[in-house]
Image 1 (tube, rainbow, N blue to C red):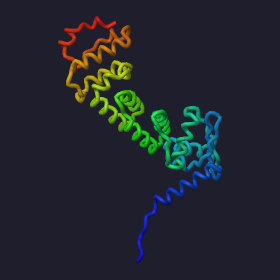
Image 2 (image 1 turned 120 degrees about the horizontal axis):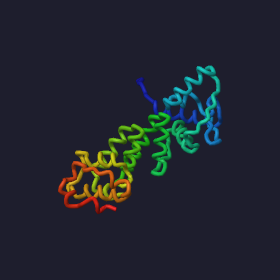
Image 3 (image 1 turned 90 degrees about the vertical axis):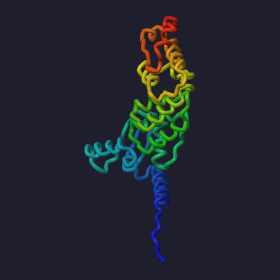
Image 4 (image 1 turned 180 degrees about the vertical axis):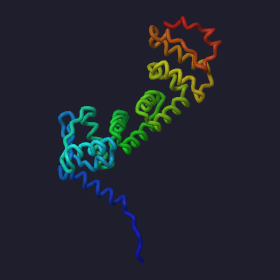
Length: 234
């Protein structure tokens, strides 16, 4: 009895293993990337298949120098250690990621359009969200237009406002971000007093410049401002 057997995963693993071996032995490599004086020999097709940035770069370079030519690229907008981790992921599917390097890796993956790498970093950061870091992650995700991480960090920050309000991170955000955060309809607070106290703490962090930035988030009732004069801040 005959049958069809799909062995894509096994084939992919073997192919990656062979390609990585070729990379390490500089066999059939046709792209040299130089970062911080360190040289990385890679295959154009492999990199182009994982990164839209490199796909476009290879296309443009091929038109200029001719197809089949070995390319050399000097990069100054990425660290050698970060590129090494990116390439290791491309060629092995494995990634060494931890809280100390996750943001840096995501920034690099986003900049050079390694979409699968981005998804891995986002998944890791979502699991690492805490009251102490969610606003920073939210700001980073917004700057990178990383919608999935942005939505996750925003939802976490809103749901955990009582804990977030007690962290130092909230004292460093901009007036605009603070207003947007405190005025969100989904802000989880049963004690309106806490919103007022958060505003006061934020102003006290930099009273000289912030005391001039008067604003009243919708969640802070006017009677609170009437009973507690902002002039005490200083």
